[in-house]
Image 1: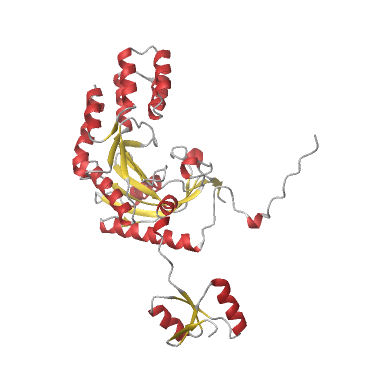
Image 2 (image 1 turned 135 degrees about the vertical axis):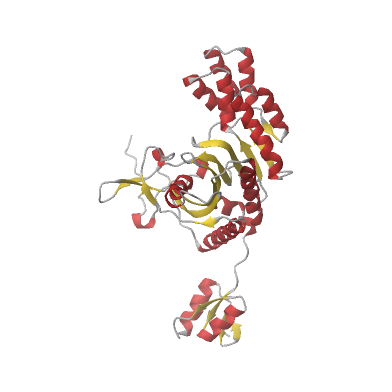
Length: 381
């Protein structure tokens, strides 16, 4: 077999690493509009902005440790590029606001990096998020506030979404009440989260579970829908933990004040390991990945909850609503530029007096008019 010749790779200077991408002007402008609009909504709800470094100390206890980009600084310490915001904001709170006052409402935004490609992020390894954290309280009112704010923020940028609410600890509690421990519990956790009835059946048989327990595990995968799901979950709750989880969700649901757009998925058992209470994700029609995700966690004894919105996905979901750019004109003098901008137009200043060069540039950029003083004329006229 003759040797196969691979096509030459483009020069390195023309490429970007896999999972990263250039952002061109129209998308950049729309993304900035979304980011600014969301930040304004968060601020109106009392969430003050913070910024955390893109570099942080690497640690095995970090929830994304296995997927983070790591590097060694000149002093020999292992650092990591920021891979999620909740841990970074938690560190900031412990360092800067150890005594509150609580509840503490913070918002953030910026880029994140992951070493491995994931289909969940659209094969991106560099991506942007904005989000909020509500720290110091763990009441149903606090959880309901985040659900309301999440949907309200998406509505503010023209996105109609449904919020799926889960409670990973509920599944764990039901498994515990069924007497499951160790590897069997871990495996069934995974099977329930994947809603794999076949795997649940196989695992139940392999571990000698009773018919009643097996039936309960299958029932967990069906706990998806409106508030009526909470009553079904309550019927499966045998122990204190499971009953407390259902009671918490029953308290949150009416406080969220969302007559539609709120669904419960009590079979969701795995998200990030640090979630300690409810979790939630927002979906919009036409996009099979969540626009927003969040949940409740613990900051070493300090309760917290929050959510993040993926800017790449939000840009994709709202692309149809991208407004037309203002007309671009070429200003032949500074007064022309000021006049054009005062009319709501975008004005670039001419960089030369050479008419052929200006005409050629206008043709390439699609510029129809130029401005001089307080006069706008057709290009070339």
